[in-house]
Each structure stands twice: as C-alpha cells, then as structure tokens.
Length: 351
Image 1 (cartoon, rainbow, N blue to C red):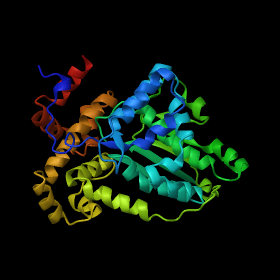
Image 2 (image 1 turned 45 degrees about the vertical axis):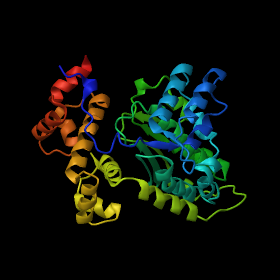
Image 3 (image 1 turned 180 degrees about the vertical axis):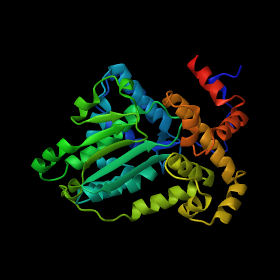
Image 4 (image 1 turned 90 degrees about the vertical axis):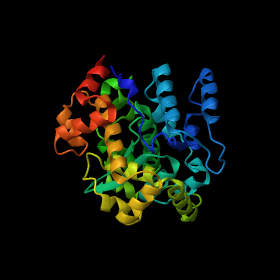
C-alpha cells in the first residue's frame, strides 16, 4: 500500500530550487540561544550557497531551527524576543536602511512589505487598512514547510518592533490594548500561552498570521537619525529577484497565495506577472510546463497541507478550498496525481 510519505514528486518547480531566506534573518537570534545551541546557529549560517551577492539559507532549515530552539528550551517567547531585538539595519544587508530611515510607522511597514519579496522566497506579506484598524499579514506559501509556528511569531515581532518605536509612548501603550493576533497554528501546538507573551488577545487556526492594530499608529513619527528615502537599491533588488526567479515558480507562488481566496484566473495572473496570457503560455512551454500543470501541482501539494493541518475538514470542504466546484473532480485529480484517493491518503496519515 502506498504510504503517505511516498507521494510522487512530479513538480517542475518545487524541488528544482529550494526556497531561501536572507541570512540576516538569523541576527535576531544571536545572544538568545544557549552556548550548546551556538554550533547549530553557526552550522545554519554555513548552509549558505556560494552566491555572495545574495547570502541566503534554505527557508525550511531556518524555520526548523526556530521550531527546534523553542522545543528544546520550552520557551514560546524566544521568537518574539528575537523579532523585537532584530537590528532593522541588517535586513537584507544594506536593503534594510530605508526601513530604518522611514520617518513614520506606516512608511516603515510599507517598505518592509515591499522588501520582503527579496528577503524571503515563497512568502506573502501584506499591509492593509480597514476603517479604524490596520493589519500586517504574513505567511509562508510553500505548503511543504510545516510546522512553521515560531517563524510567524518571529516575523510579527519585527513588525511590532517598528510599531513600538513610534514616538509618543503614551499613545502607543494605550493603543496596544486594541492590538490582537491571529496565527495559523492551533493553540495546542504552542508550548506556552501566547497571549501572555504578546500581552494581547490571540486566536488560532487561521489562514494566515496577522497582527491587527489601530490604524492611527501608522501615523506615528519614528525616531530617525538619518531619514532615508532612497529606495533605488531596494527597487533594483526587487527587479533582479523577479528576473532570476523562473516563471513557473512565480506563477506557483501566485496560485498558492490565491487558493481559497479568489478564483484562479489565467489572464489575471498573467497581467499581474507582467505579460499577456499568450506570452505566459509560451514562456511556460519554454520551461517545459503549462498553466494547467502548475495549477494542478499547486492544488495537490496544497491538498497535502490541508490534510496535515485541518484534519477536521471533510474532503468536500478541502476540495472547495482548492477551487474545485465538485469534490468528485478533486478526488479524480488527486488519484491521478498520487495513485490513491484522498480518503485513503487521509487514512494512511492517521496510521
């Protein structure tokens, strides 16, 4: 019988290049780990590829490191402390300087969001405002990276650091009473009370990780020695990142982002990537792929993620989350891809 761990790797894009995170992500952890853990920190830094223009480490390894440190210390506050003490000037090397040089909380957060596509692959970070409240949302799109609970706490800690740097400590402290958090993880996945660590209400089992706060905090002034509005280096880095990322990977990330959020429309995604649907089909063919192949692969890998993280959902509910109008279509597609039905696969996972 086919075991749950032996689903065939049929993707053109997912195993070809491993998602990376800029090595500066490790900086917040310096000084927080025990002496016994320092070799692991150094070993993780040594996994960087030879391209010194983009010193990076495998994202899965970084996430695994944060999970391991929390489990070993049984201290759920570690990632939050790492994010809060992170040196913003080191973000992506010199790329973090415009974030640190922003004069308002809102502009610093927008610069962080724009920069994140360069800092970390296969990830979504957004800033949006809804009436009197604003929110920064963050999630890793790669469905193979799980658990990833403490990475989210670390990243939202960086966001919180920026907000708390806002001038007018009294106003910030009062507004913190209205801050709330949402996490993908379930409460029982965390070895400690997150609400006490963050001093804010937390909810769990969400589709993303999010920090919600009063929108008025976006207008707070930041204590800046040298204001920096030169975004040319960041913009060049973003353009270069898009240039070197294969089209199938860019498309896959957009599909994973939109699953369970909006219809997957070829024309819209092509425009977003910056080309016509016809050009996208031609370029995908040049990479030995097609829009349908990428969509099918994304749906199947996301299905495995849903089975792992949402065991209480029915097959029909998961099919709907993946964009199938009929769960029978999902069942047939999953069987073609894996060799077993979704129901059988889920049973194998349970054993």
